[in-house]
Length: 376
Image (cartoon, rainbow, N blue to C red; front, side):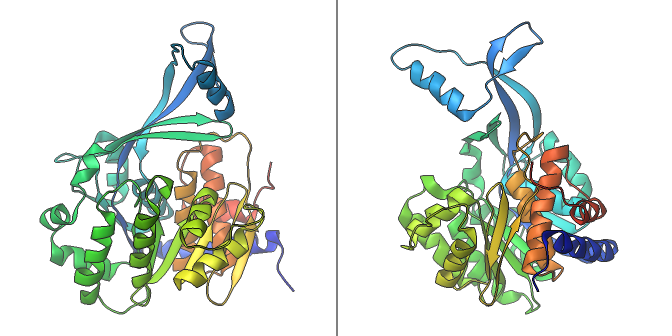
C-alpha cells in the first residue's frame, strides 16, 4: 500500500534527524555562478516617502507597460533586500545550512569576495575566480522577473578555473565530493566547454565511489535549441561516471521537451511525473526532477514519484525557492532516501525558505517535513 503524504513526511523527517549529526562528513562541490541580488518592489502608488503600494502581479506591471506604448513612463524601484544570488551560491548556502561540508567555486568577486557572500564564506569554503554578476529581482505575488547583468561572467572559463584553482586541487575536490554541481548553464557562456573539459580532464582522475552530479540549466529559453541540445548531450555523457540528476522547473521542462522532440504535456503541471519520466528515458541519465510551485515529481529508470508541496500563495520571499528545492532534493538523494522522501525534502526546504526567508538546518527541515503544512 502506498504511503500517504503525511507518512512520507514523517519517514523523511526521522531519517533526516538520524543523519543530521554526520552531515559534516558529507561533502559537496558546487559552482560556478555568483550574483549580487537586489530584491525589488515596483511602486504602484506612493503615499509618503516611507509608504507606498507595490504592483502586486506581473500581469499588472505588464498592463502598465502596454499602456505606456508610444508614450513615456516612469517606474520606481525600491530595494527591499540585497543578498547573495545565483543558482550555485543559493544552493550551496542551503546545503551548508543543513550542515554539509561545502566547497564553492565561482564568481563571488575578484580578487576580493563581495560582502554579500561573506556569511556563506563563514559556513563553506569559497574560492572565487571572477567578479559577480548582478540581478535586479522584481518580486510579485505571482512570480518574479529576474533582470540579469552578466558581463563579469565571461571570466568564468576553463582557463581561469585552472589558473585560479588548479587542475590537481580541482580533481581532489571532485574526488572527495559526494555531490557535485556546476549549475546555471544559461547565464554562463562557457559552461558547456567547462563541463566537457571536466568530463575529459578531471573525471578520469577521480575515484569510482558513488557521487551525484546535479545540473540546473536555469531557464534556457533564451539560448538556441542547438545550444541546449548540445549541453544536454554533454550532461548525458557524465552518466556512468556519476549519477546525473537534471533539475527543471515547469517552464524549463516544457523547453526541454520541445528541444528533445518529445510530445508536449497535455496539462503541464498535472503531467509532471510523465514529463520527468520522458526526459529521463530520452537522456538515459540517472534522474530527472521537475518542480512547479505546487509540488514536484521525479523519475529514474526504475521508479517515478510525485509529491505535493506546502505551497503558500503569498511567500515572504520567492527568489531562490527553486535552488532551495534543488538543495533539499539533492540532500535526500545523497542520504539514500527514496524518490518520495527526496521530493518531500525538496519541497520542504523550499517551503521553509519562502515562509521564513532563511535556509533551514537539517534539524529544522526534519521538524518541518514531519509536520508538513497543507498547501495554502
